[in-house]
Length: 246
Image 1: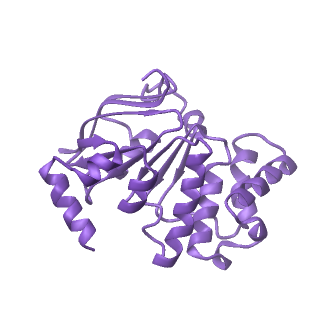
Image 2 (image 1 turned 60 degrees about the horizontal axis):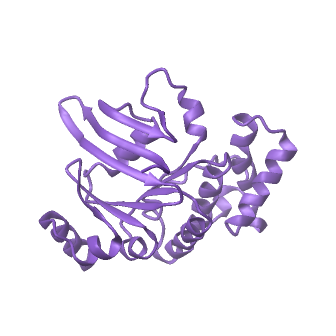
């Protein structure tokens, strides 16, 4: 894939004698949205953590814009500036306002002056629909607002790739929609996104491609209409029947 932003080739990850990823191959093109689905323990979160260098791969290569980021000589902090990450829990600093949370990385990591960093932070909060919450502390924000603030923070260094790890799983059902709508808007703006999700309807609507992980392998991959509507893998059929029942 000549315009691949991310390439994962033969990636294995072992924790002691336990193999969690067993040879993952994946490519994501510029502006593509890829959804990872699969049961608990299938390897989705571990794969995202390997891509963001929070975990070191046991074997295989991960490249970001043709740079081998699994090379042990690579500067991890420099790589992480090019990858935005949002986890299930919002991980906002409770003693900082929404604006201070979003402006922190551009100032401390990116070297911007306070004024410029805060101007970028206000723009990002407006982009996620929170312009009026800039001076609010996290405990004054709803779960959906906290997660949207976390997404704004992940965008603050203008990342090449956005990783989303089950970003709606900690939200009350009525707040899920606002976060999913925001991800849809980011897709329409050309953001390259790899997301682990259990929201099958959303994945069907927004993802360009779906990868079903099972026991640390990509067991089935393809367009949403084929993977979700006409699955061929028995384990995927079983997974979907279980998920869609609830």
